[in-house]
Image (cartoon, rainbow over all chains, first blue to last red; front, side, top):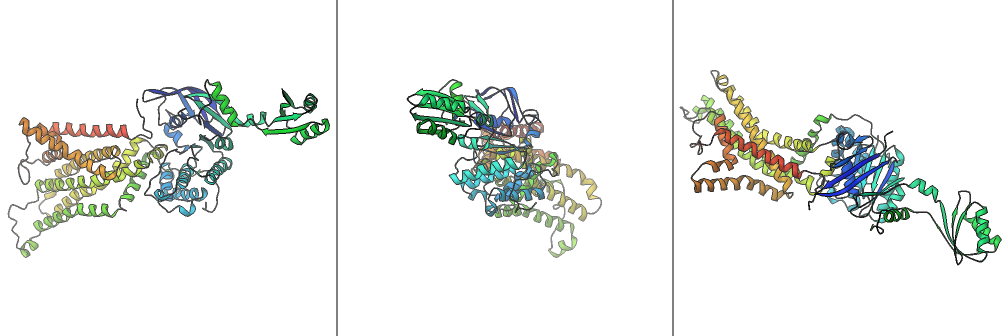
Amino acid sequence: MAPTIELDGLEVQLGGRTILRNLTGVLNSRAIGLLGPNGAGKSTLINTLLGFHRPSKGSVRVLGLDSRRDGKALRALVGYMPETDAFIAKMSGVRFVRYMAELSGLPPDQAMERAHEAFVYVGLGEARYRLVGTYSLGMKQLAKLAQAIAHGPKLLILDEPTNGLDPPGRKRLLELVCEIREASDICLLLSSHLLRDVEETCDQVLILRDGRIASICDLAEERRGHRKFLEIETCGAEPAFAAALQSLGCECALFGNGRMKVVLPDAVEIRDVYKVAAERGVQIRRMNHRRDSLEDIFLNAMEQSGGTSGRI
Amino acid sequence: MAVYKRRYNPYDGPLTPQQSRFLVLTRYALAELFRSRVFVLLFVLALVPILFFAIYIFLVNSNAVQLVVQLRVAGGLAIESEFFFTLIMIQTQLAFLLSCWVCPTLVAGDLVNGALPLFLSRPFSRPEYVLGKCAAIALLLSVVTWVPGLILFCLQAGLAQGGWIWSHLWMVVPIVCCSAVWILMLSLISLAVSTWVKLRIVATGVIFCAFLVPAGLGAIFNTIMNTYWGSLLNFSELFRLILFRGFRLESGFGGPVRFEQIPLFAAWIMMILVCLSSLYILNARLRAREVVRG
């Protein structure tokens, strides 16, 4: 199976400025997150994938299709939810989605059926006969999602899907995205400023900075590698405690004044740490249990790519 | 699949042919237009002159009615090329008024709320978008120009005696072709202006200005320079010249043609240039994403 996205020395110039520079990499996960500070080139990359911008150098292949040569064939496989407002205000919701599905090639009766299904699926069933112009911001976002999935795409591109949503709306939308991902073999490309959105929905992350790739990381692998990461502050018998933990298979680093960091292997639970501490008569004054989060990965990538942590 | 099944299903059914997909745009555009009462009223009003022309044809060809209304038809009321020239001139001017209303309505809805990226993120190109919208405009304007022209031609052919149809069959060409040229130019100019000016009412005004302002400037140029080349900026007059030549007329119906010195090829070149300029504007403005330079 072809990788979801292949970047081969991709460079894009817009208005005389180079926006994307020499992007090279392969993204083969089914759910890809696109991260980066403002102006990093996330939306430009999405627009280039869709064929809205022509690469000035290099190429990009999506699901094995070249964005420049096979533009139409590629767009036939894609469902796109843009970041900005995109609707026809004087159409009812279901008619709008049917219209878009027909433009993707569905026959009118099938398009109508799929439009109803998509609207009910995203939770706008009751509002589907209302004019789209009268929808609230959250409803418009869901209508955009409905039009993106109505024709059954192979790749769903979501550009800042949770923008302007309240917390329940955001939660609902992310649940939908996860459901869609699980329910079929659909691939997902999600661009967001919100690290949690990407963390909850994606397996692989492409981090951009100043139009360059700062990092491509496999989130699932990162999670596996740093499953249980403890920051502990103890009082008394610190080296003995560390030695006992090491005998259980843990990795320990001591920082003095009772502070230590411990990476637990899969077989060791936190309660085992308490048990060892009790046996050795060590007081645990503070314990932080954390994973190496996407935020760490992001900040790391920003620093490594030569600069202070990016604004997000 | 029923709507109560709340889960995502991929689609693996049949697809419509790619070549005819622009007609989806045309179908939806026409459906949206006919929802507007104002448009329906304008459309019906644009067809009213046809009724009078039909009555006229009937009067000219019916001796019984002529006797009843005591109408004299000796010589002056013959149905010849001047009749169809006048018919097409009137109807194309009404088509212009109609296009001023229709084109901004068709395009503004897509552009104002940023729906264009949704169209272009599908297997659907910008030329197909223009083709779909132009087809909708062309269909509407055809219904008020060459289609009634041909119907009246057939009516006259049916009512007239002595092989009228065979001696006048050549008129079908100017009726259809000249109207088509005008419709094409109107569609492109109106669409270009509508993509440039996104607000519907303003776009309607600008389309008017796109025809009237150059015509006025041309007239001023003619007066000051004592020439006739300024008339090249008057698109209606250019069309009138092309139609005039198409109907093989020597003098205009209701007065002589004012700029017979302008060569026909110059009128054609000007119209082609206007169409190309409109296409250039459409190419520049119809983009999924605007690029700000600098």
